[in-house]
Amino acid sequence: MVDLKHVQAALQDQILQAIGHRKRLNIQGLGSKDFYHALPTDLACDALSTLELKGVINYEPTELFVQVAGGTPLLEVEALLASHGQCLPFEPPRFPQHRLAPHGGNASIGGMVASGLSGPARASVGGVKDFILGAHLINGKAEHLVFGGQVMKNVAGYDVSRVLSSSMGTLGVITEVTLKVLPIPLGDRTLKAHLTVQAALALMQRLGQQPLPLHSSSWAQDSASAQDPDSVALVLRLKGAKAATQSAVSLICTELLALQCTPQELNPLEAQTHWDSVRDQTHPFFSNPVAPKASLWRISLPLKALKHGPPSFARHALTEWFGALHWVWANEAQAIRLQQEVSALGGSMSLWRAGLGLANDTHLKALNSVVEPNVMNLQNQLQRAFDPEGVFNTGRAHP
Image (cartoon, rainbow, N blue to C red; front, side, top):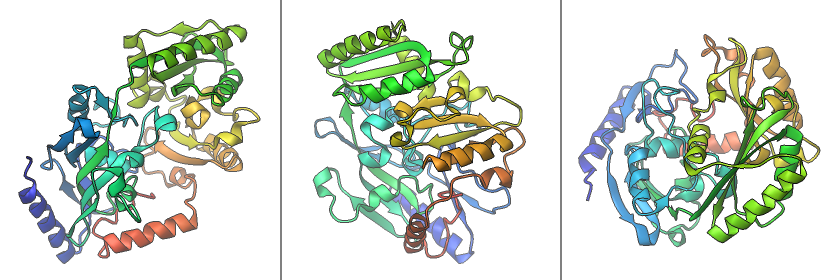
């Protein structure tokens, strides 16, 4: 049994001191998401480290849950689950050190929950918040609070533990979290084909209307498709029972052949390498801005907005979630046009990573989609309830 009482007491003492000296605290784990909703350089904050909050508190494979301390490395938890044939189905990104986390190198469970980020499987299995069963939190009054339980039926009323997802550490320190886990599916197949963006989106829309074990998708230009400016490499993953995935592979191959595309099935190593590269953003797309002043934008669109075809930027994007999520490189002038198109389609757009030398460019941040007033009002009410003194008010939830 992991004993975290002395660590929790030290964190509570640090929060009380911050209240007394009217200081702000920025919660830091392993640093893998320091770039995400990064703090303004002129904001004075002391660091509150969660690195001592480590360990698996309770794991019951037969009950499909794991209870983990907030500072525990994600890789350690995933390795433990894999040894029992289980996984975190929403595929949280790890963001390796050499790409996006120069001060990190791994992700922590608390940071995974606080950021609310999910990988390629998000559209088929749900997000982080859908797998949170319970959480322990030290709020801005240094109170240690407990929410939820270890099974779904224990959650009644307003499920506060799920509010922690995407809160970016503005509500308090996540000391423990209980997560629902699932068995790793026995059937796992990945197909790849080159076709136009229009054909890829239309295929996803047709397949989405059928009872198929669709799991993940991505498409972007690659070395083979770059010679044809209208062509992209569609990669499609199917997961489920072996018989179901085999049947789906046969059906999809027939569809692709009818489109005069030659489908290729990736071997398990090739498939895992590809999906990890999309999940962790080590795919070549994420390290190749189209111009020195280009920034990376994250664009989310409702699928119903795509019924008449893909948006104008889709050909140069890396697209996930069956067409709903787009990653686009654009400079400021291009981003202004992007914002107009995304708004017209009813989507949202946010700055993911500023271009070289543009980290503190307020013009870029002003292009983020505006949070709806009722959502912002609810966020402010929650923050006042959890942190009335503003100890964790860093602005990272809604920069």
